[in-house]
Amino acid sequence: MAYWCYIDGVDTIVRMAVDYGLALGFEANGLMVALLITQFLGFPAALFFGRLGERKGPRQGIMVAIFIYLLVILGAYQMESQFEFYILAATIGLVQGGIQSLSRSFYARLIPRDQAGEFFGFYNMLGKFAAVLGPLIMGWVSVLTESPRLSILAVAILFIIGGVLLALVKPEEGQRQARLMENQEI
Image (cartoon, rainbow, N blue to C red; front, side, top):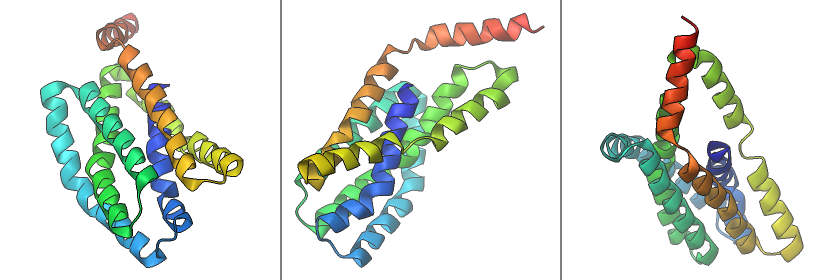
């Protein structure tokens, strides 16, 4: 559930960024440049988050990324210029790949190795259903308040819920349960 909430927030930011920029009156060509910036920075940043995950653990890296996404949302709420949009796009590029790769790594530690295919099938299905709640939340808030700024701010709830649920996960217990499941099938 933690993954589904925060990854819905991630996917919502990615999918709704251009619409949000257009609602604020920014030029479409400039918004496409911002998307390219995000993609360009994604790979090296994912490597950095991989190292962070090795040193501090994947959950800590995910929590850092969630915090950065919350800062991005606050920045987007206050954003006034297209240049600020570029800065936020660069920031998203720095965390997007990291949160995705660390999430897979963390999940892999909590599942039985011999059933990884089934468990990752479920994981991927959750990922496909991400970016459902976020756009819905943004739409409702935008209709109710007539403010795109408040609608982007509302997406923060997904990151907050995801972060709280992730903090409640007991990785050692999950690993213990996964090993028990592996041993029962022998």
